[in-house]
Image (tube, rainbow, N blue to C red; front, side):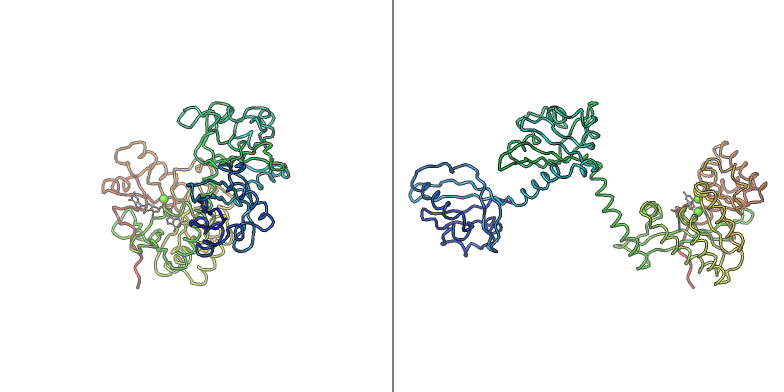
Length: 489
Ligand code: C2E
Ligand code: CA
Ligand code: CA
């Protein structure tokens, strides 16, 4: 906030009162101009002292106060007192006007007290927080460092003791130019300033540097500066934490709203027998989200599923997908995708089982796709899930097959009905003999286990023909049909 500027004539009457003064004292200009300044703006107990000083000033006597900063108490229109910093200057000769510049120190002092409090009373807290905290003596030597400070700077807390804070961690700007001691904000606190800095770097022991956000403040005892305290945090970590938190809240709201406003939609992509590609036998359900601002714009699952998974919201989405898929499965064969988290949760299998029974879904109409990686993450849970769904006539496809490591060894423990050959092996199939070999072996593996194969990502006629020759059972991809909104009757 700007300084309050108050002009007073030789009689102590207010002649000038700026906007900042209105904000700081809570008086309007009209309230104050023409009134005796001290009566309104100075707490009663200080008025007499003020008058004595002011008279001396006007009479040209001692000018101790002129041009210097002093800490005083101000009186707000609501009757409360606040700490203030006062500077007085004289403008003009006859008649002279005295200018008082007043700065509200409440906020600053609160921060200062907070920091002092931290250092004096909360050593325990200081050992556990992630921010670095240093206490400096009046000559800039480190007299206390918490473990985080040591960690951030690459020293043990003990090694930091007695070092010159400035030369240790603050010897040059980010651009490499040298930081002079006189301009060092860490030491600024020793000159009585509170410094908040967000665009500097500190150096580590190993010569690397990191961006910091720090505040340094003087420590006073009975008004005398006896040292300083500096709190610092590595900016990337601090900013990241903040951003993450905001993002989680924002994203959670967005998913919640999208569910309430029914802005999720399922598209269906045909899966066809290799022997009869024109006649799809099933549709894979793929989720999209209508944009809030522009409902005609659909956002793909890659834009929201990873975050939903990270923030623990995927379950709500999976549940929504299951309810829609059950509805659709009453009409025709579909397959739905489930996240790893849902596969591991018995309630999700319960939900599907109950739905299939309630709606009397024909056997085989519902298929669930779980990725190979998901299955490998928790083999026991995956096995239980697969078993329960297989028992009620649901198909299970191992999605993105061939991309995980070590599934082959476990395939006999995973009684799935279908393997979906990942599109990574299909995309360049016609040019790559390696890919051809992989597809060939997946097909023979599946046959040995009594499973069917589905090739994903079939984009060309050439790929389709090759896959037919290799003995793949089903095909899916842009060449056969893109994902489209489900038909509604
Ligand atoms: P996925 O299960 O492997 O689905 C196949 C993805 O490949 C889909 O992308 C599909 O649109 C796309 N695709 C189909 N044919 C072709 C093709 O010929 N060429 C190419 N380049 N791509 C093709 P989409 O819809 O963006 O979905 C991406 C992933 O998001 C899915 O991969 C699946 O893991 C996940 N997902 C989609 N819907 C759901 C859902 O409802 N629930 C959950 N938990 N995950 C879903
Ligand atoms: Ca899938
Ligand atoms: Ca896939």
